[in-house]
Image (spheres, rainbow, N blue to C red):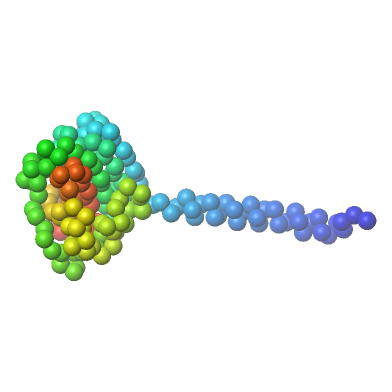
Length: 177
């Protein structure tokens, strides 16, 4: 005895449904990373050549010795996260462009996670200044114009002796008009 014709039709109908389900799951998994672009630059000169500084994704104040630059950004809303290394001898020059930050008001102490492996968990969510400082990072801010009527303030974390730094504009209250 073979399978009845009714059963074959039922199985044939399931194939498109199963295919559609797998396609939908694949699309949803692919949408998990919603960043418009993620870039890596071995040295700052590569970021300059690519136009990342001109487009505003990487600020002009990074030292020329900056290397191993990881950057991810979204266009809408405009947000950026960046990790970089630099020659520790450049730490003093880097800090001259930054304003020291010893505490965070509760309304500005939250950083959105970029969901990338190179961004430290310590700089995600509600920030704990003491834990950040205990890790060797010092917090700073720097403001820069992004249009004639709008400025943004970057939250910057620097470990001068180790020559590593991070910045983001995703912390609450970073843009003003």
